[in-house]
Length: 229
Length: 206
Image: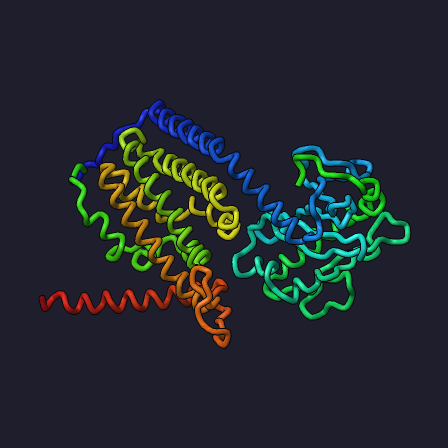
């Protein structure tokens, strides 16, 4: 008959010492790496943002960060504003368009994007994904699918007669069923992500476009400060 | 176990115990992020770094970590190095960071890393753990790259972003979709198992 093997009992102190000690070392490592890479990541993000703005609003020589305040008025954005917009200016200080940041839930996580608004066309004329964790090969097709991107040649975002809301809600329809200029031709196989893009644009444009159309003219004639590009 | 490190610790991960083609571990990133060769290479290198650093840490701390608390300690160590990789990739290239998406964070739950920490690093010296982690890391990277190369050539008509064939080449779109990962994986498993089978047949005769 065999006798059961006695396992040595580990003291509670040893357990606390190991878990808390390793936790503290790991926290120190993470904080150190965060501080070491913080500046570089911020530079990368700023560079990426600048190239994204230049890509969807190429006419702009420089931009001014703006925001919509609690009363719905367009104001110059304070540093670190969560979802800023950018007024694009040419060399003479004329406003050539606006680029706005939008955010909303996609399939996997929040999608953060930039879209360009044309005052001349009353329409959204392009978008660029800033952050997305959509499924590679499926959800990320919203960035490359030609028929989907064709909807943004001139996506209607005109205002209702009162000027305080969009005349028609921007909406993504099933692939091949787009009949109106405010509809986005969806992507079969990336339904949730393509619908999310439409929803993000509709929610954001409903707030931003009335403010831009009402207040942007007040910013015309501005010249860039040294720090603005 | 204080045996001296041997080259076998390194070599076994490359072929005999390859983590992808033999142990079939870490399938989530192997199939999801291998749609292009560059993504596969980046994921392989990121996983190898975490594997190496967590192997060193677990081996160094193996006498300090009580048996009952080992899994929580290993996960804490692995998650910390994954966070380090996450920040490092974002600092190196935001484009690469965007293309790898959620899968960087998911390295934490790659069973290959926890498996090597539990089965090897917690029982062996730092030297042996380093060789084991390097071997498994290189084996994992080569396997991901093999899958990524096939998928990118057939699915996108390019390799590392460089166009390969003339315009007449019809790309196989399915290869860049998730199902293409399974096809490429099956193809490589077929090749690897066929070679192993032939080796096994030859061995008794020698």
